[in-house]
Amino acid sequence: MNAPSDFPTRALPARYYTDPALYARALERIFRNSWQYFCHGSFLPEPGDYYAFELLGEDLFVVRGRDGALR
Image (cartoon, rainbow, N blue to C red):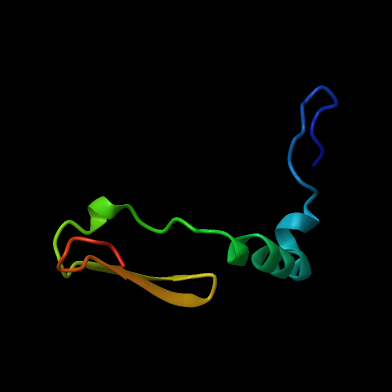
């Protein structure tokens, strides 16, 4: 299905959403080379609180230390 001719299109071509090689390239060039947000500090209000998850195929966690710092 094509958009009407007067419809402003700003999406990437479909292959950017479906091509495994383009996905792998984006992972390496963009996501693995930049900071990624995964939770807000308010999720961990008390020392010892932690948040564990998987991101880009990696198991990660953040913990609030006894001194109140996030690690």
